[in-house]
Image (cartoon, rainbow, N blue to C red; front, side, top):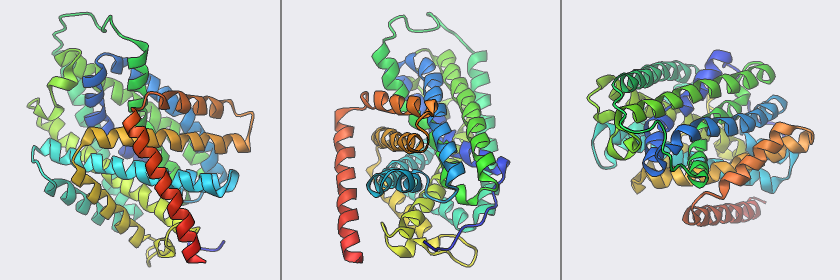
Length: 394
């Protein structure tokens, strides 16, 4: 199958920044707070547990990306190691999950600016789209700036929270229950899965078989540290129900507010970047219109970028951050289940892939029935699209 190829311009540093930019935004400034409001102190333990789950799944992604260094991530791995239907399902799940996640990030920009309505989220999508259209090099530079500001804000907040600690009770809730911990872990797992953007951009990474595994592990380690810092800082500052009572941007800390906004923009940027590469890959295999696989004179998939952005902007009109995040969590668990199956198909003795698969299956039990129903219906729509579009294309 011949097609235009993307340029390999990302080294280890660039890949790590792409991963961090995809992780530390909505996870730190939205998901941690929402989870703490639901599950209180379970979040402090769920953060490292979700990180461990992400490591096993990340190792499968890195293994496959080294074997198949092309755009598309698990969509491509599924096609090459399993079968076209599972490959398509993975790609469809990625589009669903990451479009919802990108909409969450755009909504987060409006949340932290304190301006209700769709105007700010749509403007954020337009701003980021312009940067992505400028090319992978300029995107990487802009991403580095956004990530640096975000990390400074997270560390500032965490230090201030722990420094002003006024704890009136025990460090952890004595009534902590296992179901709450596992539900929080399932919810927070999606906050780590930005590492998958590194694999999705495998066609643009130099020496992918070496760079991608290293970038994934480093990215997850840094993200786990930052998330734990946020959880402990919030807990120390406002008690076990801090997520229900405060928002980070309402603490009178301009650095934190600015960092939250740059974090959302960084996640939005990297998600649109990753989404466009999956649209491109699906266009190459004619699961989507072939025009999406066309590259411009700078080897950029312009139409795929624009399609990604328009769909993200449309989802922001729903306006429900928690709903968008919950739907993303369910689809991401299924997506990485297929990732692990693909890794097992290549190497049945790969223990980390079996553990990753078991973790995805186990955590999926804690997704709410309503979200599951919406997810299954969405997959059904995707499979109908594949069948109908293929017939029309013949």
